[in-house]
Image (cartoon, rainbow, N blue to C red; front, side, top):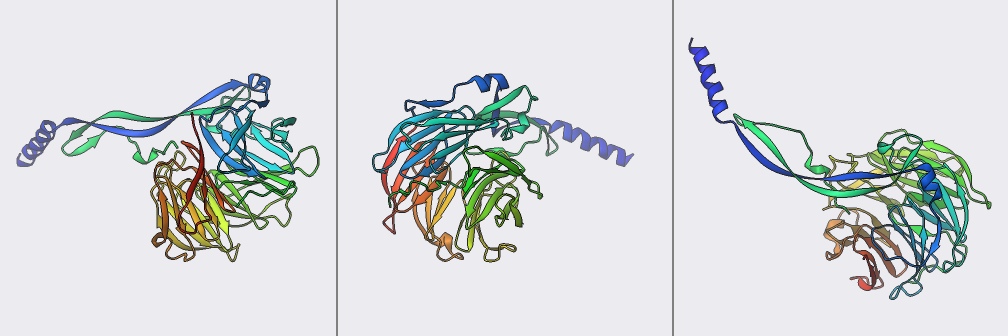
Length: 415
């Protein structure tokens, strides 16, 4: 009798203490933009008068020109012969475009699931050359509606939503969510006429000699671009799982950023990359850059990496088949990054751009040279005496000839 009475009292106490609490959660909502295959193939592709920058993404440099992606819409072509006064000269209308790369005056760009080519020998008068159909996978397989439709882009929204939870006896009952699902929505250039251009750390296209490499969510597609026609050679599947995000070529190797680690691929046979090693890490959004015997990786909370931490990892890659982690540094919200002459540039989204002296790999955090916090920083390309940076605010260029501080040269802001 005593035990039964005690249980009743506890039950009554818990019911009396029942209450409802309100909490707000923040997350990123992605809404796909669908078109039929026929519609997207019928959309015009070609050069137009300059457009205002609105929703910029990847950045690429070739000779004295910059190519800036307008997410899902096309590519801005900018004459950057004077980084203090860049001039927009053309816009390439390419539906579904995200990435690009240039070699020998030929621009390669994705057009949803197709690969298109332009002659940009004279970037002021680009010439459409060809379209290779169905050689690339759709970037958004999670929104697949079958063979009749393709996703040409996504609309991203940061949602702040009120949720009601009931508490009973100190316990919380309600839907499960993860607050970490929030992501922040967010010298003179070379004059060699036949040079391969240079992309940022967020690139998914890379050119090495006569080959174009394009990463998908789980593999690398190799194209031979030595001749006028493009030849798709094959697909190399990456075996350790995760979502492949970025590609960085260095010294005849490919460094692949994946949500669960970094792959190093050798190009002794460039037509068929060979996996040399893989180092894993906690699920995170993950671009990679390399200089000398060291690889630098930023890990960040993002849409595909909801349980991640924000940090910088440094690896000794002297032995490409056995990379060794040197040090890990906490960061705020790292995105793209760049390295030149042991100066490390890290984009931190809404937290701006940080510049470190990375000479001492064990004390990078103690050698912060500058923090520019009044811009949104997504990715960078350091080249000679100029740093090119892209972010939600637009395109910014800095002089890096001064070893201590960056000096703003110019900005093309989004409209």
